[in-house]
Length: 127
Image (cartoon, rainbow, N blue to C red; front, side, top):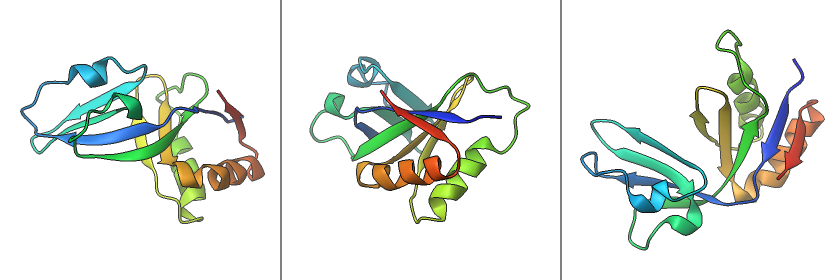
């Protein structure tokens, strides 16, 4: 399978809210957002510029999207990508959806991550 990634220019933030909080409007108004609720937290990933002051978050993330729709029978794609980055000491924040997977890396690691992907036959297009 030929693997291609789309690298988004926009920076994202990974935020932690109390588990009982509602999904905030500022997140829902973002062009991209992902929400996960557990008994311990409400985790929100959205465009960095949408996060108000005072919200506990980690900023300066960039996002790679795996191109195309991934069938549930496919095995090891996220593992392959994350292993390539781990070998370079680059940590990730992964998000999976019904259609595909997203890998977030800190903005300062994007050049290295992109070189690693390309040197392993994975195309990367910036959008």
